[in-house]
Amino acid sequence: MPTPRATPDDAADDPSGRDPLAVLPWSGGSWTTPPVAVSEEGPDLLVTAAEGSDAWRHTSYGFVHDDAHALLAPLTDPGAVEVSFDAAFGEQFDQAGLVLRADAETWLKAGVEVSDGALQVGAVVTLGRSDWSVAPVPGWAGRRVTVRASRTGDAVTVRARVDDEPFRLVRVAPFPAGVPASAGPYCCAPTRAGLVVRFRRWAVGPPDAALH
Image (tube, rainbow, N blue to C red; front, side):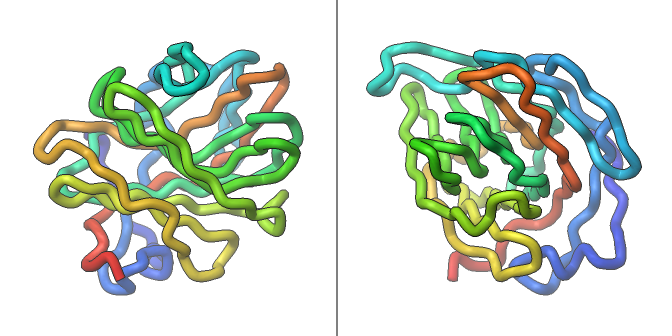
């Protein structure tokens, strides 16, 4: 795993308010599926998604897609990962966030995406087959979003926030205990070409102290 570096303001980004996070360099991960283009602009990472890229297994739609662009590094167990990015999306199913992945049939993605003309925050949990949950967040459009996944025991707690507002609970999901997994930022563009996502930050740290 790449060596993280702590930053002075990391503690403000940790829901526990106690333990600082450590920022990972963009060079510290490996792509599951390389994107069309990647470039660094100052501290940010700009990623261009391929048309048709997606992550889903079976449920309702009947297909399997496993070509989302995820930049992953091993995550400690227990442990937490945070990803920040700009929610500048405009087309159906444009999306970005974070992925926690053990293998092709065991993974979670969480973030924001456009669905039925509205920006939504949500998660897809896959244990052989995928499920999907969303909630509308129209006020998050064009703003900086941070998504956090905290893994402890047999569960992952997903939270998200916009700018410096408080984190809100998105999902408490099952995830196999003791199974090695990697995590990091992801994006994909199931319906169009030309989506560029600006990622602001990728950090790891200790898990949340409590669910509430």
